[in-house]
Image 1 (cartoon, rainbow, N blue to C red):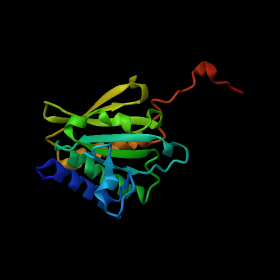
Image 2 (image 1 turned 45 degrees about the vertical axis):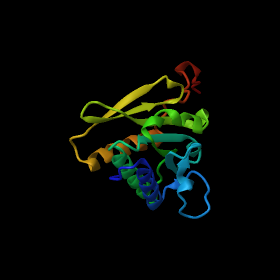
Image 3 (image 1 turned 180 degrees about the vertical axis):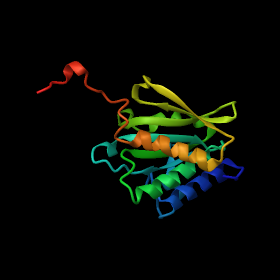
Image 4 (image 1 turned 90 degrees about the vertical axis):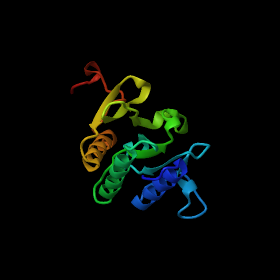
Length: 190
């Protein structure tokens, strides 16, 4: 992601997503058409899907969002590469994962692009003034939010592994936050 112009960074992100085998979000005229990876009306956001494998939960979406102008986009892209590679041999992810690489100004603007009812969780890379990368993780309804901090003084590969673990957890059937759980009083023992 050494490109300096935003359009060059977007094209580099599209090329990486395509080479990793990420599913495009839209149809296009040719197999490699950058428009197939564009999200939103202005095309300034690029992204793609990693289809879920769980028979029921694959219709739920985990959104991973990073800003194209931030250095953390490299660790998100590496985590995406590792997730796609693992999904070829393992039954992961359980839920579908949408990777969105957004311009800095579009942080938080992705919500309008999909039905809120299909979103299980969202992990957004946020600006940080500290020597770290910060992800804000939220679940439907905004009732629960957590922050995940990744130190910048560790290698990108190690931070990518942390992002991968976060995404795998959110996409796992074991992550039940945001779903209505029955109260103990509602569980009938027979």
